[in-house]
Length: 220
Image 1 (cartoon, one colour):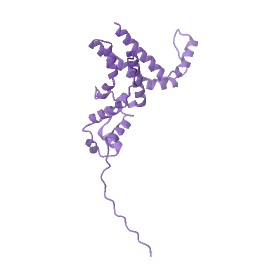
Image 2 (cartoon, helix red, strand yellow; image 1 turned 90 degrees about the vertical axis):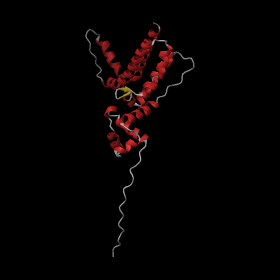
Image 3 (cartoon, one colour; image 1 turned 45 degrees about the vertical axis):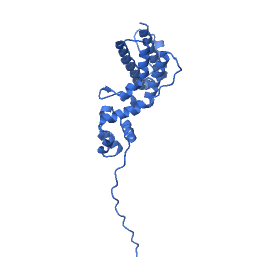
Image 4 (cartoon, helix red, strand yellow; image 1 turned 120 degrees about the horizontal axis):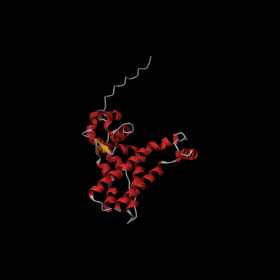
């Protein structure tokens, strides 16, 4: 006589898995690898986490607050290197620019979190504090300082952003260059050297150019 096996009792549906703010931020960071902040919705985040969308509202009242939290997390990881006491402002500014470049290379999503809904995020504004200290030390009037604040941040972030694409493009570029009224041998040498130009060298040249402009402004 065959042995009858007990029929398993159907399991009751358990409570939905709890999610933490950290898990939500991780999900948004994954989405931001392929999307701009204004393209991310609460529904997208919920789908990424495989949870009901309403569960997100236990942590964040809306998408804007969620993205601000992600910006806080991203820029909160920024570290400014320690400088010796009394270091010249040029050293402080160069250290800040280099640290900013390293941070954006390590966390590329930071470049997308500078502004949300058309406004600079408070988290990003906090990391420009060293630049504000430099501009204040130069004793510039408020109008000039505001212009240079906008210019330096635009130049630095733009250069960092562009070099993420430009360095790989240089490596893949054909070796030949062409230009009218230019020596063919010289052009061939430039074209051969171009793939070896690294991001760090371009950024360093750009950063030192920024410092040179501020030195000129300070001397006026």
